[in-house]
Length: 278
Image 1 (spheres, rainbow, N blue to C red):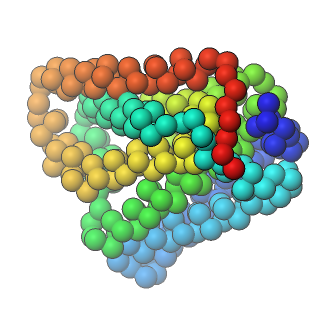
Image 2 (tube, helix red, strand yellow):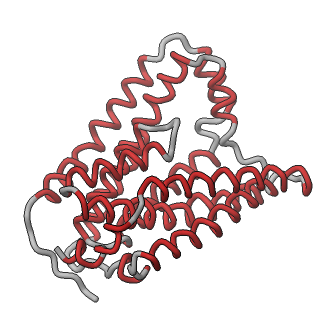
C-alpha cells in the first residue's frame, strides 16, 4: 500500500519516547504559561504563552521526528483525494458534530451524577473572560491544535502503527492515544479519533481529517463563546433533579449522528483502490 511505503521510516520510531517527549513539552508549556501569567498579568497572557510555547516546541519536535524518519511533511500531508466528495465530507462532519454534542450532554449528566458541585469548577474553566482571550483560544484550539494533532496522531502515530500491525489495530491504537490526550473527556475524542483515523486511511491525506477536526473544534469553541455549558448553565443543571430530558436529547443526537458515521465506516472498510490527484 502506498501509504505504508511512504511512511516506512516510522518503523524505527520509539513510540514511548515520542509520547513522553510530547507530554514533557505540554508540561513545560503550561509551567511557562503560568509564569507568564504571573509576571505579565491579564487574562490572555497565560493562554497565549501556553499555546505559543507548546506549538512552537511541538512543531519543532515533530519536524525533527519526521526528519529522522526520512518522511517529508508534504508527503505525510498528502494530496487532495479525487474521490472524496463534498457530500461525503458534509455528511461525515454532520455526524461527527452531532455525535459529539450528544456525548457532551451525556457526559454532563455523568459528571453531575458523580461530581455534583465540582461540575461548576470544571465547566467554569472553559469560559473566555475577554475578547483577546477568545481570539487566542480560537487560534490555538480551532487552527493550530487540529493541524498539530493530525500530524501527531494520524500522521506519525498511525503511520508507525500501520508499519507494525493491521489497519484495524493501528486505527484503534491511534484513537485510544488521541482520547487519552484529551482526558478527562474520553468518549467524544475516542469516537472522533476512530473516525479521523479511518478518514486518513480512506483518503491517504491529512487534509480531510484536518478540516473535519477544525470544524469540530470550531463548533466547540462557539459553544463556549455562547456560554452553552458555562458556570451559570451548570448551576441551573445542578438544581434540576430530573435529568431525563438531557439523557433523551443526548441519545437522540447520538442516534441521528451515528447513521452517517456508520455508513462512512462501512464504506471505508470495503476494499477499494483510490486514485489521488497530485
